[in-house]
Length: 339
Image (cartoon, one colour):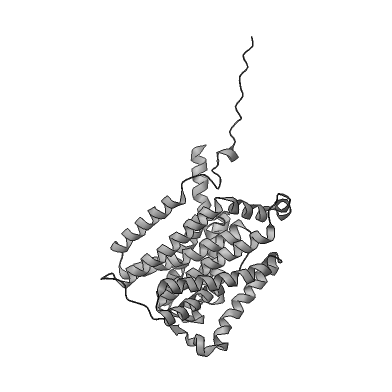
């Protein structure tokens, strides 16, 4: 008798690559991040702790934006305005109730509703039309503070009443803990979402809307949900920034902030939460570098524009050296080692 041997399918590079439902549980990344941040806050000086807290606040918004733009393909130039919406909602609620958890919930609800409205319009627009809509939002929202100057404080902004940190914890350390708690919870929820069906729907709509629709994916609903999730992240980030500054004003959320956010996720790596973290680090480090260079040159005009110039140069260099962003360098190195 002839032995019949079962042929095993060859393992391809695609099948060997972990899919969205495989790999390490996001919970372990969140726990490791919490331990690392807590340890750093005990060894860093106060100003560095403040910068660490700022990275956490930026990470919250870049994570949501990279899901919207990197995984779903919707380009938003108005996330700075959504951050301003969350910040003002937090300030008004905090000054009224003096309850920080409740104020954060108020900021999330407000920006989520704004995300629904913008998402409904975004589901009907594509490419430059969507970018133009979100850009208009970024221009209009700061001017609202002048219209309702008695409530929102116009250009002077609003001061925020905050309780002191518990016990003898330094303020900067307390800020770092709270900002990174928000960032880690946000990224854990996002990582859990994109590993499941929602993440597959996002990628399907990004790659080919017609094929996704034929496969049973509700394209409009997926796009709206992506915008709502990203808007909620921006609102939480705005609340965290208001908590950091202990005040809020339209000058804290200029149009350039929205541009910086987009450039940060492109430089970090679209579609990867690790790229969002790289982008958040750049959003803190590059402006600090520009400020130092401007102070040494003695030119205030140079100091105000140098950050945008540096971001542009870094963007060009990274796109030439690593078109997939900084996060792609690590992934390409790992894939070469496996080969």
